[in-house]
Image (cartoon, rainbow, N blue to C red; front, side, top):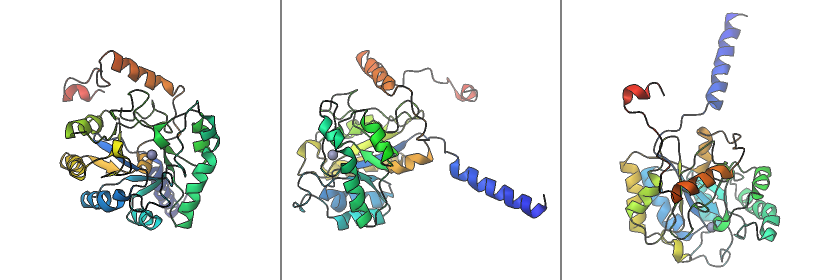
Length: 298
Ligand SMILES: [Zn+2]
């Protein structure tokens, strides 16, 4: 092999390995997600995220009264602007039909519900979404192959079934244990929350876990049960910025996680978490290194 060829070969093998090598998951890695195409995502959330330089995913649906109520829901021009700003546009289905095993008609329509949003994105020059959020946080394992076939790489659910829906609590994503198409929300903001409730979600982002944080409108006049006041949201984002969190969109998980690695039994980690809630233990209750010296041998 002549020297020029050798240099070229080394150069390209470096490029290839740089492209496919995953980065180690740092502590304080969080994903910000906003559901339901709410107007305040454009008017209030966008400037705050831009101020901090945070990434985020906006999950778009044309459900509720999106078509007619432009006081409470974004226009497609505003959604396009979010995409141009560098934020990710994710798929939240056309009509926001909740998927659940006891309601097979919603599952039967999932493919066309996804395709309708894909088409609207295409019409507006937005890339085909690769991230998905389950409408109403309803899940059915039978949805997973449909999402995969539609090119969805990462899909987010709520904090249920581990926690009940009402308080918005959840668990951080544990890559390898959680299926990438059933990623739990570490928290799902509620109107009565204080900073301590938000921290309970965000602070789980350590030991290889990633906290996926779920929001609706800031404010949310159309969905008051998941409303977040603007001052509170500013407080949450300021907490992330001051404490050195890395804030990314859902698609950026691909930098850290191989979505082809899936658990044999996706429900195993869910059942394990339910057991830890019942016994009052935490996912942090494992033996940690005693000091820096011991940490070297881990
Ligand atoms: Zn929704």
